[in-house]
Amino acid sequence: MGFHKRFITKDLILSQKDFESIDSLLDADALIFDTWSSNFFKRFDENYKIYQEKRNNHIEENKFASSFTNTDGFDKYHISNILINLKINPSWLDIHLCIESFRPIEIPQSISGKFNLLCNFCIQLIENKLEENGLQ
Image (cartoon, rainbow, N blue to C red; front, side):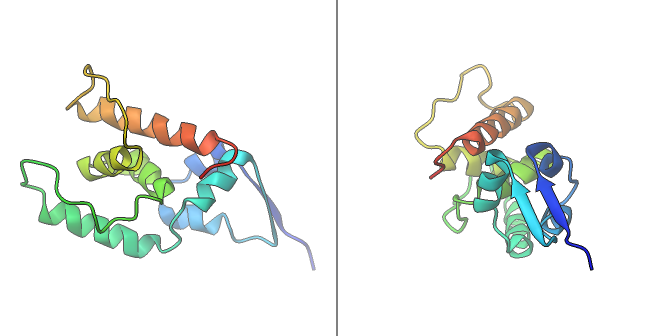
């Protein structure tokens, strides 16, 4: 009988195409994390199916809204889920949740209201946060 260990890195996590693939990375006898990956899984909601269903329902219910809707029902601690959504299927909700998670934050005027630029801005914010030692 063998002992299955897995090295989990930022690149490995970000190369996954869906939440199920990310979850399956944890299926090993031993896991070895770098700092970024360790922080990623600390801030990852393992109930991602419930999170995704809630997210998708919220997007559907508010797709014709002219302003940001209330996001109080979302736990903004789980920035890893926000990051994955921004990478694989971004929406304005994900951008809004990211910005709410990092308040107070200055958004450069040059990217304000520009979806793709705001996505990249939010991805960078989250990736930088997950790089920190002593992540809160």
